[in-house]
Length: 440
Ligand code: 5CA
Image (cartoon, rainbow, N blue to C red; front, side):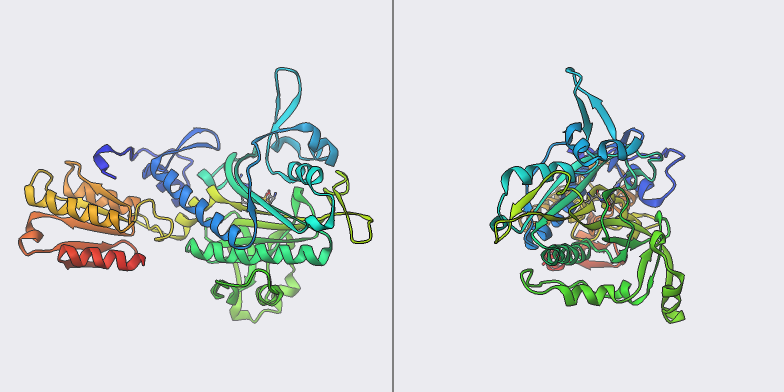
């Protein structure tokens, strides 16, 4: 992409409510623009990051055996009346009346709708297990939308739903999502810790929140420090027994403040006790027949008896993650994107647009990085060098190649690594090899 033709509106005047780094940088670097309280447009740079996160979430869901679908944002109130949640959900639900006077709502979550789809399509235990997911916009009329996309009113969520015959089989589905979450967050460059959590309006008796530690997080958490350093499982056989992997991560104490138990916490050796703030990026639930019983979602078991299916649901805050990743990875100059989610893999700064050789070398590096799949952003504007450098730092691309007449006089360009600040002078070919090697 050539910057002169791109839409990258950087802003300097920040609203006073932009209280945390991710919110400020998302506005300044032109990732989002607020349209109403808690409602944002995703500008081109933000849209790219959101798409990359969404794709990693999708790949890890597919790997875990979940199957993608898409449900609508607008739902009929009737389904929610069947489960009693229409009244119970309260003022966070955005209620809509259509032209015929029918009660509708903008979905805050989809347990009721997916249960309806399931009950009308699956009638036998032979159709189990099922695990379905979608990545769709949700609306919750939060009392205090704040911190930009972290607590929005409209936000993008991955929500998955599992259906099993027995509690034991449902536990296997839960474990598959549990492991998929650890791998997902690791690929996003995050250290997410699973913690025992309250189930709130979703319900159920088994639940974990996945929390990334950050001083500006809204959750108060208590855990064993070793959990933070525990590596993600990586490649596993999702059809095998995942319980030992889950047990290894739930044996050590970790809980959010609603589930905090001072006695349990005190059993952790003093120097490993971690009490901190964190951001909830995912939340998984097992709730058995909470929805399948009132909605009569039953299948025939092997003996021909009807059994209410055992369900779980599994959410990831896809749009919240954009803010979460920035909270975990920024410095005083701007965002420092992990390679896996960066909007562009590398920037190219042309210090003398119009100079024949500088243009030619910049263009050549651009073409070769593009062919290698690095997706470069080429700053071919006529802004001053200082403006170009600080803009690249602000938008946080992992690598920047600077091309100028002085360096080219010695046959070199400069490659800067955003995360470390390292600079190397290399011939153009070596610069390209270095960057493509880093992405290999
Ligand atoms: N149906 C279940 C799981 S599919 C559910 O809705 N769970 S949830 O309420 O915990 O939401 C799932 C995830 O969405 C949360 O972990 C959080 O990362 C994200 N999320 C929830 N509310 C908001 C919000 N107001 N703004 C941004 N992200 C949110």
